[in-house]
Length: 181
Ligand SMILES: [Fe+2]
Ligand SMILES: [Fe+2]
Image 1 (tube, rainbow, N blue to C red):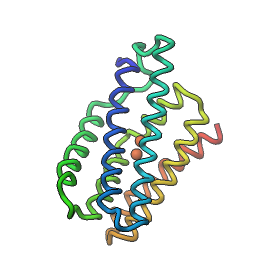
Image 2 (image 1 turned 90 degrees about the vertical axis):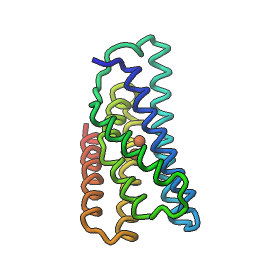
Image 3 (image 1 turned 135 degrees about the vertical axis):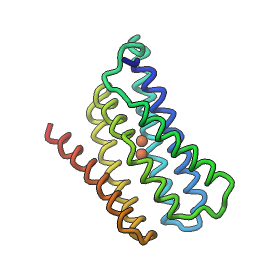
Image 4 (image 1 turned 30 degrees about the vertical axis):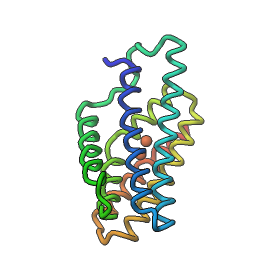
């Protein structure tokens, strides 16, 4: 069983890299105000997760509970998959001014399809106040709704849109369950 500290370090690293990638997309597609706002919103959402995880980690450190066994586990395969997506996207979008919008939207969907946000949610719920958990979930559903809108608008790809709607519905169901609990 892994320590909470280790899990928090890994998730924070992945969230920070997702944030940086979305911020890069905001810059790359910044000529269009709507797209800039959308990508910046996605980056802001990840920044909020990084900050929430950082706070949890600070509190647990003060309580000397960081090295205790984590209540949540994160599969190595999920971590590897997400790192590979981020490595590839950073390499592709890094030096390029011509990175296609469709590729960026597809990449965001791949990132959001990994189980990371679920794990971040569980961590916040298990270790912090449920209020923050609810807030994060509502914002996540909102942002993924925007992602779905952008895919519909800019990609002529029904399968991609369907995948995005599936994760919106998944997080919406979690939100509904959380507000009934
Ligand atoms: Fe996140
Ligand atoms: Fe995310």
